[in-house]
Image (cartoon, rainbow, N blue to C red):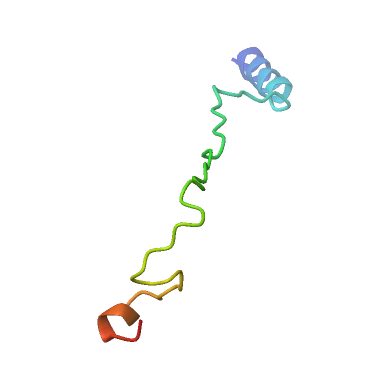
Length: 61
């Protein structure tokens, strides 16, 4: 009985320094592509000015 307890404790002491690592997943960020094909083409409606959200509904743009 004492030998099995001592053996169990010895095994636990020897295994305390070990680590287990499971499978890992590495995810890279999304690739962003900017299409600049409409360069120089400005619609007559907004003439290239930026209108913040909600301002167009108020008639400020």
